[in-house]
Image 1 (cartoon, rainbow, N blue to C red):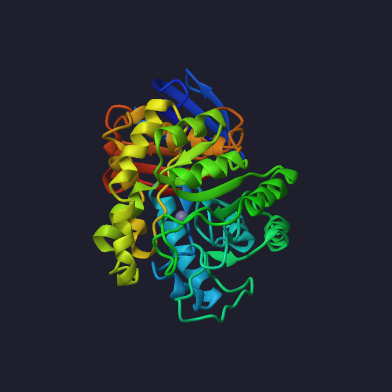
Image 2 (tube, rainbow, N blue to C red):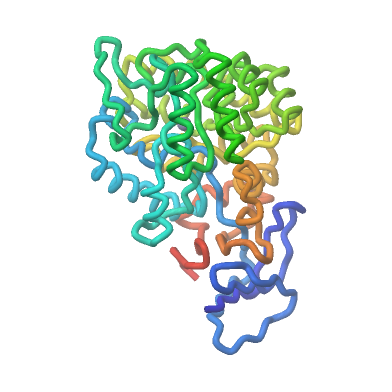
Length: 407
Ligand SMILES: [Zn+2]
């Protein structure tokens, strides 16, 4: 099956330019050719893009597709069957916003990824790491202080697992690798939605972090860390972690170190704004809401510092429950300090490079997977065109299949 997008303005994310009047040929799920003249092929399906922008599908590098609620203690008690159904709805929503790949950093497993691949669930390509590793009392420990009992069965649908000590950490890492993880996620300091930890506390000993990094590298994978504070970022990087998530409380030294170590930063401003506005309504226990202020305002400063220092940033959102509808707001929230071209790169090629999948997606380029969107307007001039899918997103093609079209 051949599809030809005719009269397209192709967004070249590397060059940061629109290439007008191109004809893009898709065959067997891959981009075959970007031609400057009309292409003849008798049996092709032809789609007239009429000068609109054809660009790579969006990549969200920090999601939790199983987080149907902001109340993680409740999530842990929900049957996996319900959580899978909720995740299907969440992933369908992501696809309809133009996201053709998402990286799940806590919760999603090989079953969901398989369901997407086989077409049982409408959704973006799902890159997953299984459960996030957390120490007792850490960001993945959802028990209130008065509860000691804990169900560590893999089939319970929480976002994390509780592991203490090097042997336990190694075993959990190996279990996730056995289940096909693309990366391993650890909790490096406190978080908002976990009931007993403090943002300022580091999590895991250096020996434990080094053990996860070693297990990941042995499998040619990398480690992703939940880290807000400069101290947590620096110790993670020193121990070989490659993907820094959130980073709100970074200082200039931590930012410089991300760049030096060829690591990536994935800020997630969208979730703090959302939690502040409607988190409690979406299930966040009210007593945890005060933690939002510890990181909310600092987030934009970290993004600005990182941009000025030339740190590679990916697009992340980290939204929970009903707040997933704000997935495109990260563009607007960063737009005051990051130019549109770099926002587009964050949500395309940078995400692909972070996942080491730049030969698979992230650009409109021959040989890559046909993950494409058509938008009205030029995102390089006005990033807001990406934030209005109802009016501006005209077509979504994921892995060669059109999943939404108004053309
Ligand atoms: Zn997260």
